[in-house]
Length: 80
Image (cartoon, rainbow, N blue to C red; front, side, top):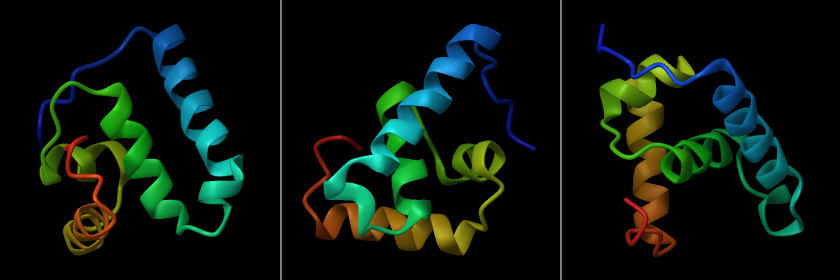
């Protein structure tokens, strides 16, 4: 298991609220919830790997890879 950098519990609450906020935006309402969750972590974490995302989200490595490819296809590569 990867060593996840633990945030202060209050910061983790803010991170969760950020992800929930994005999931309710009209531009994200038609996008897969996996995508939105990973997007939120890209915004709130300094450095991410597939293993780190797997530990944070519980998603499979294959699903994470698929969603990162979706980012790249949608030109989100400036974030990653």
